[in-house]
Image 1: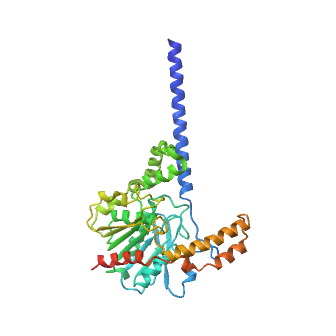
Image 2: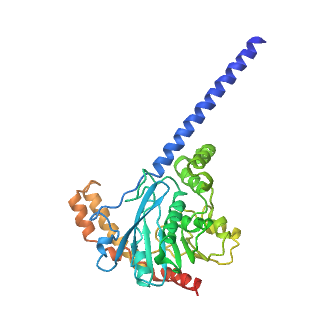
Length: 355
């Protein structure tokens, strides 16, 4: 009998040790996962990108440098077309991007009379921060940007509009939890809450095993963001009467339309000033193609085919000089041509909001 009790005790101790080791390994593993997922991002190198950079448009759009603190990190950006008088559009960028990632959209708003503030989030491009921290960081950075705007007397009485995509689409809605005077907000392909989004990404990497790590992810996010770790877009939208436009592609596989998106929570939204646009056209119903015209899609396919042939020719080890020739041959403005109807729907929403 004593031998049996002793054996059970040993088994219990072994199980506790194994559980402790599992917890320690999980905490460490989750932190590594977060660091890898939200690693620091750098701007594209000029001459090696098809994206429009400021050097491509500097003769047409004036800008002035701005900076402000978000927590302990200083964020950097620019105010474009500061003499425009119809209002200020603040752009919150997506994951992997920075202040110049949405220059076509900036140009559109500027061409229609708006000043535009573009900045890089923590850990992105020229802004400080060893990494991007996490999904909630975009909200905190936008809160800091709006606090900077409110501290500038030149913006007194100027209507402030928000525009964000993906990570930024979450930010421009969740930031409504904070006390800012926002005329209207447009969220493109935004998710509702950080934790379900992290689990959705994690399932793609680890399968169902990600759910065994849920408690450790929860604790990690709570320790990282404190009381702001569970901010939801829907709760923020419902806490205000700010007009909000939600736009989402019905075949989005990054922020899945039916599960983690803001639009999937439509029945929970009670703010009467919210409008929805579901993008279902074949060429712009995903995550990153919502903005672009059919002509852009056709041109992109043509350019991509050339790129594929070059990759095959050099066995996917293309010399830099060949890459530079390839990118120099691309018409960046055709490669980033916006869908006029899509952008006009946002512009009309802004203008109706301040009538």
